[in-house]
Length: 370
Image 1 (spheres, rainbow, N blue to C red):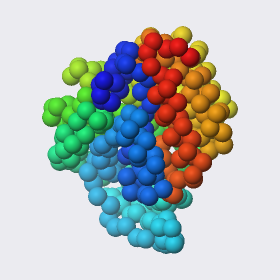
Image 2 (cartoon, one colour):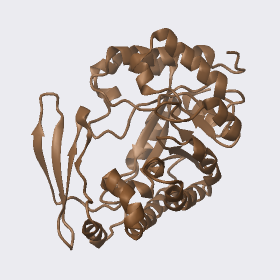
Image 3 (tube, rainbow, N blue to C red):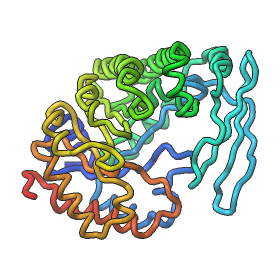
Image 4 (spheres, rainbow, N blue to C red):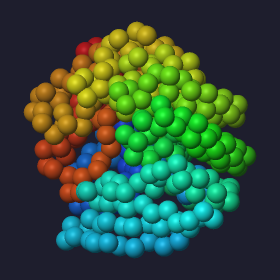
């Protein structure tokens, strides 16, 4: 099988020739596509090309709360010797300016959130909506260029990602004290996302859509009630629209998702990642396989920090454990619970990433015999 065929077969809960071992070669980091640009990734690049399976994410531009509104200006506050930057971004609205401060590079994070008060929400919603209508040529060029060597996924945020412009503690408090405000922001974002998805579907973009964002409504900060209201109906609608055109949906949700596995399957997800094990997450892979492995593809379960701290033999044993617990019958793809975010990458992580790929090739052939 080609890498693309292997991944698609697993995403359909089928059994390919072997367990796919996934490396994402383009991610969400504003600081760039590390694996293609950083010399410290050269050995990983070679190993992925020879032994691994490649997913490439083409991110549909989200703009200003899921529209194509542009910021008023960007101001660099500082840049250090490693290229890490702090940037102030100002958006002009009919009800006053909004300011966000971000850090990029290894420091990557938000220093000042765009939305801090109810008045800021009113400012956001006062901006005239300009629908997403980007040039889709890049997506088709990538799909044609990679061909059978990789699967190009269309990646975008779900409506709860609009809440990423709100400090997480503030957002949690508002689900109790300002629930109508949260509801309005999420509902507006959802309608805009539907509009964008319809544009993609009308232009035959596919076959796999990667949806990010449900993790913002996972406990402990948020409650199951929040997940049921702000995630389930919206993501279900998106999945149904995408499925109506014969495409697949790969959901991404960090956090302790064990108690939500059936809900993800009920929404119609074709696959779910990263299925973090304890202590960071709470997913026991063998249990997840029994409960929902016949309904959706399970993806992940190798912690990034395991690659940072484990010996090569420990990595090989973890790979064997994952294959033993989830690969039987197909519908499983092995990958770390985080994509690359370090530049340069520590040598031990690089060595262990390569060990993970080679071990999956060695032990992951069907029928499973580990």
